[in-house]
Image 1: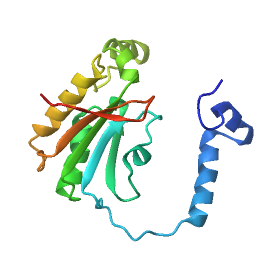
Image 2 (image 1 turned 180 degrees about the horizontal axis):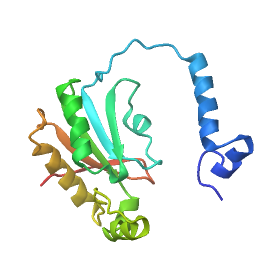
Image 3 (image 1 turned 30 degrees about the vertical axis):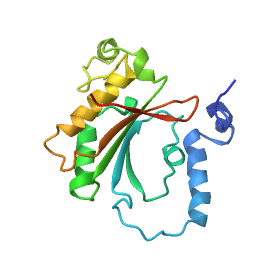
Image 4 (image 1 turned 135 degrees about the vertical axis):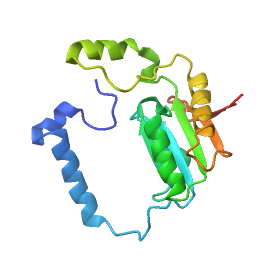
Length: 179
């Protein structure tokens, strides 16, 4: 039984691949699209860093509209070197000043360990250059991510950095005290 709001990936293969389905959806979107006349600078001068989990509809959950923010997503919403790279560009080139970090309950990284990396190396014969960044305590991981942003020498604006845990069952954000 699928828990998705859409047909399963298997159902999509009747008319081609899932990617084919997405391309057809884009064609319908483009037919109704009109250029909103925006540039790359987010209207609200905020960057949101969040987990890639498909259950997080960030724009809906935060009341955001197209053009309001930069959204940076990865596994766990962890602040990695690449997230610092994106935030640096967001701040220094495109004017953001605030950073919102969003982790969530029931994250897949809570069930992994760095052993995943070792197993991957054994399977493919090459050690990944990246860390899994698995965690057991989502609140502590939010604190660590806030600290990484606040101490980065590349970021200009580190005074408005706030972290939250999104509850995937209630849709509510819970703010995490950085202390």
